[in-house]
Image 1 (cartoon, rainbow, N blue to C red):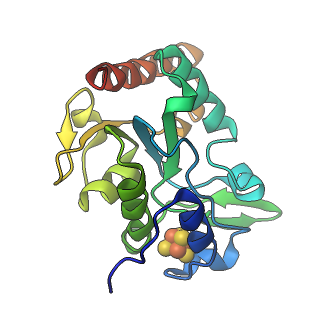
Image 2: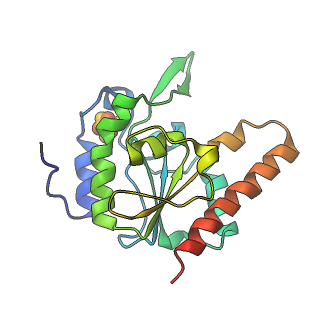
Length: 201
Ligand code: SF4
């Protein structure tokens, strides 16, 4: 089935809101579309919305988003030149009492939602992409990509768009040791700086 003729981020947002291409829409509050300028130089692709993102309808507004914002600033990037989005647009979770716990999307869900990420790439045409974690990399390349081995290497999509792979910021939230967490944050910021340098005019 050909992709629908959507030419704007607003049109994309409206279409994603009606999506039933996989079962994840059923238990989520809403689809969470990408956000950023139409002509973003860099697209950052995460995994999926979290609890806060699902409730608020915006990507990267929870704890991982705050870390991402710090790293974007630390890398010398301006948030206004970056579009942030996710490989999967609905929040996958399981209920534990009243808490909604994150569940990693499976390959079927990632592949079904790639339809929207592909459209986003066609509309925005970023000069480069940063895959934040294994799910984003799996979505972009259609196969598993080892995150640690791929850091600071420049990969590319079939059309030549450069892709840089790094961890998802939520991985740092799970590190209890403060020194280790700081070190991982510096590494993460360095990965974003590395991507930004490659895209400098
Ligand atoms: S996760 Fe993606 S493919 Fe699945 S229903 Fe939501 S928008 Fe559609």
